[in-house]
Length: 337
Image: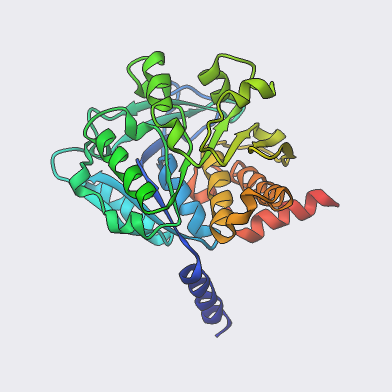
């Protein structure tokens, strides 16, 4: 009976939570079963669901938020497997569609000895790249409080046009736009094309999260310097977050800026850590929009997001490693002693 009551409470809290819609790619990551080896040296691979926007959607749901995913899959075993994973993780899949002529995207991901990753992608083209505007569930977007997306969906048509239309639908409906570029250089035709593509929608976002490496990539400057980071601000931007790995994160608004310390843990795999961070922050923002104007509340939300990102690095894979609220709270409590 207690278990049934708990399940009901979680369901009720998710029903009451504002909808956060995540748009973009979901794919299969093949990760070597031994850490610290190259793809060529690996004798076996573990199959794991991946794709930053989908990871964020699952992170939101696992933290008690209400999330939906919009994207396209191949009408193949991998595509149906991924959609089932979304459903099992409590993510609304009404925005999902399938392509009978293209495969679900694959990525081979090497985990180096320090837990960082290198990617090799198979998408030529994959189904996610072929999403059309006519296939968008615009009603789902209009119901959202926050619309979250990355930059990979900007690389090629028709997905780019669908991405732009989805953003316009959200903006016209008064939905907050959240952007995490998630730079994956091997997917872009060139470095210049990546910078131009990522920045082409920069000024539309209300919230942007970038890593320190991405700041360096986009500005060609020193990511530690405030003036370099502030060059990425624009007039409509309500919040810019820079993640600094285990050191934590920095935040910049028109009114204030600062830093929130991270949590040191035994890192196994950094896959999904940034997505876990973003999901945690968006859940907090969805519940209370005033955190954008209240520095104390913002720092609390970012501390929790830092903890969620840290917990995610302690296991292999992204979605399986996404924390529950109690996982993050336990880490915060243990480090505050």
